[in-house]
Length: 84
Image (cartoon, rainbow, N blue to C red; front, side, top):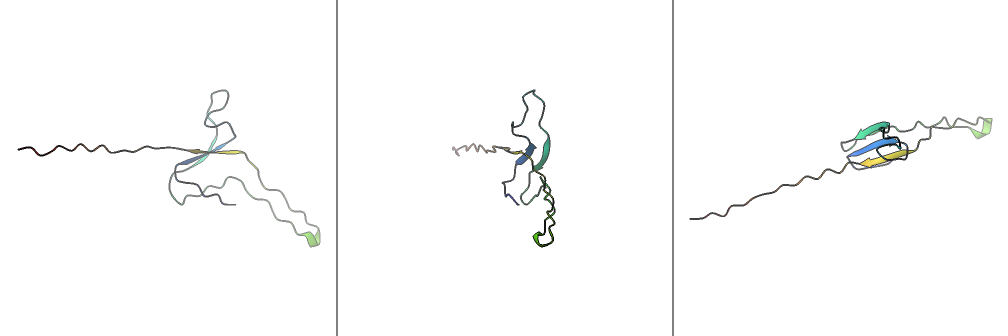
């Protein structure tokens, strides 16, 4: 499964946000800072085959947090009128 997210996302394990209850940092899986970046969060399992009874194996499952880094950029232009 692919989930499209905007640039500026930090992917964390767990569901407590950027810090846990004891104040330590959460484990960061990765940063998606550029458009088009990809990050594997969980590996899928091996598929089964019903006709020969092969059940397959389950994939990984994780609880993750997608944290958007908001960066505010602004430009202040000061215009001086021309005076004679």
